[in-house]
Length: 116
Image 1 (spheres, rainbow, N blue to C red):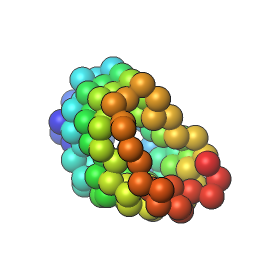
Image 2: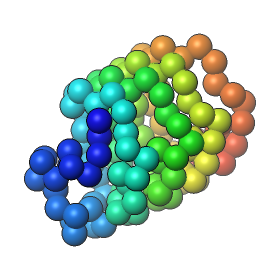
Image 3: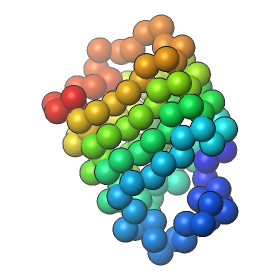
């Protein structure tokens, strides 16, 4: 699970999270993300979560990431994306969902992403 404790073990401090603009967690064996993890990461622009084991993206996973411009979720095992999962990510310009197990995405999932 990706949570605050995981980041602290990786050498991040709680104070540094507020200034963090890029977070690379490629190939970290992550299967779930704590919905409160990104509370302190309000300046995050780039988030790389490729090559993990994520299966689902729920509505609250990225809710605090309003400045997020690039989100890489490729090469996971994502089957389900909540239709409001990216609602607060209105600055999203790049979203890579390739090589997942998606079968269907609700047409309203990306209604707030005018720059995609």
